Length: 306
Image (cartoon, rainbow, N blue to C red; front, side, top):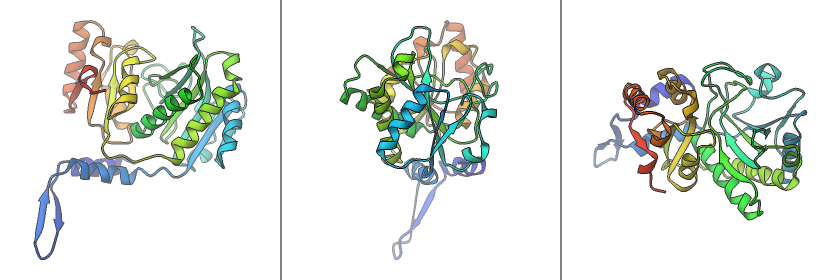
């Protein structure tokens, strides 16, 4: 959705809805679900683009496996995909949603299958722009994470950790997008079974995407990079999480929160807080005071039914 559509829908959110039923006259009611249905009607992802770097063994492994699941629109980039300047904006802008298939690196070299939104809360050390994040769909992120967990279990990838990551690194594009990755060494990047699971997940997420008006949408704040508490909620609750702002970018600012809300495709129902992962008490209080300026409800992870 563009800014004008979001502005219109926000004004409609708690406005009365009038339905005409002759000869009974008209019925006026307030309906949050009616509002959400309109939002989701506007979020129509029909044209997906799968992007990978020719330099990325995991990305090529995933796109090769994906070919067996049908016809998809691919864009193989000559250079690294983290950097906006390496991408052809015309190709990016020709689609509705971008899925970046990529390798994942970590100091621990842990085996991982992960998903996350791209963007930088602070400095742009790995592409993108400082303080800017990409558009993210909470509903698509939730559904692809659910399918990734299902497929990893079905194909017995028990030695891989399936996880979300917080929003981080580039590129910065003007289309809703996410990264789906295999980590964290050459061995895993070349693992055909892991790539098959990722490819099957992408295929199912695209073909089975449901615009569910009954999910509650949240921006998440707190916790570590692999966000275990948010993983549980994304997988086992009615809550759909878009952007995640981690503890390690503190102090968390009003600008960060506004960026996370504005770059969530759906309307944000509440801010989800990992209270134990928000640092010292004075930092928590500062954050709560900032959140009060947005007039959006706040919930703790412990309050979510899982």
